[in-house]
Length: 320
Image (cartoon, rainbow, N blue to C red):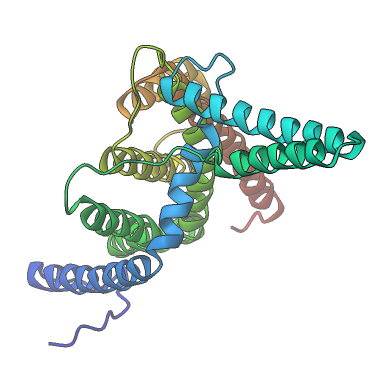
């Protein structure tokens, strides 16, 4: 049986077996796309590791108090390097002003020793996730490649899900659904970018520096990667709110006035969704709640503009 996907019209009447066959074909296409994305992500695992570690690196050692033992050690090393460089410069000045050759050589030797000390102090490196098991570096890399492949393929997977149910729509409903389907990948990418630059750094900064003077904070790689990818995927899916709201308003299930009247319930629903998403801390919840509600309000505004345009077009064309 061929695995090519043929276009299905609303007028076509398919049997249960034909529906299952179409679902099977779309699942095969999704698996192939996911496998290709997984191979690409596994090949570029070093780049993906650098990208996913960057929010953690940018928020490490930012506390001015420095109560975390690792932060205090890093601060001590930085201070030691600065002191060694200053001492080397001071002894160089004393060596230039010394009249006795032996005294000059002694100052020069001290300056050389301090410069060697400054070079030997480890640089202040950003914090990285740790691995605890023998095979965990390999397993964590493969798991992260799978997460990244799912993240990369998810816009296509969502598009296939919409395309599977599209033949059930009438011609008028399809005219509404097709433009909304084109918004799916762009909104998903926008959600992922927003979470990467706005949500993850704030959440990690808060969680990693909370009561850091009471713990030796070591972040295991598998836990961090699961948290980061889940936040990215969740925000990408949450950014599909405009598609759902525009769909139900254009089809006529809910009106714009009803959506405006339900603002309080929508805010509560957004709060519940933000609470159920990863990172049940106040910073992460607020970082997720605010864009969700803004998307809701923006969707109401966009739906209102589309309704006005539709009404204006109907008034201009009385025969429609």
